[in-house]
Image 1 (cartoon, rainbow, N blue to C red):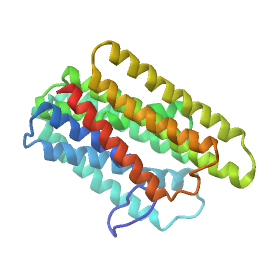
Image 2: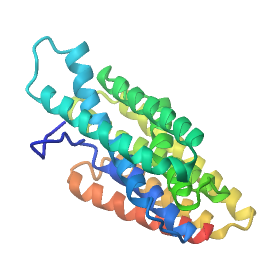
Image 3: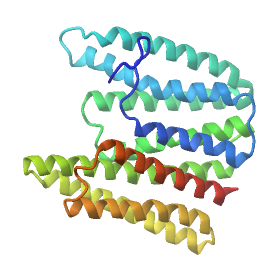
Image 4: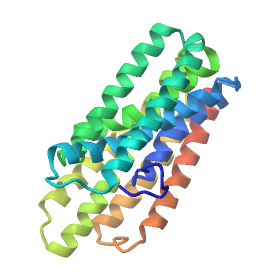
Length: 273
């Protein structure tokens, strides 16, 4: 974690910002609606996402660290700020979402956030099942966007969520395959790297299958979105297997992934409108 601000703890996972923001913003474009509740909804989504970083610090202070760390106080303060932001946003969103839906959605989102923090504290955040759960959780911002834009989860909201979940899962597994490939190149231990490479490959093959199924259904733009995802994914994995691109700066890798995600989102929006 790092404190870019004197009053709030920010997460390191910059790529995750795209995973949570793109589905959320896409929902309003598909709905062609931007009610005033967009602001509290955006605040709630951001606060919930930001809360994971201080929760990890507090969890490590409680379960791992013997001495009190300097950033623990900042983490506690951040949690208070984010809890207040979520509470206020919830009061404003209740009439729009419906109190039962807001309570259920909020409880599931909080449970996911605590699970994500606990998995990281236990250093189990790279497990495949959790990567899938994590991608689904972050992409659920699409459902929040639909609820805010229309007062209900439209059928296209589920499509938006499912497609972003598949894209994000494949992307995260590819990133982890790249990380392990770099470690293997330095240490010579290739077993874990090969395992993650196979898992990332399976995720890309799932996208290929989804692309083919959507094409057979006549949903050509949605199929094109998956095609953008798996073509770039296979290209990255081919470079990793050949030992290339390991020295590519992370900033460049991140910008490239952001560009792909933007293109993917644009194709999904076009296919759902």
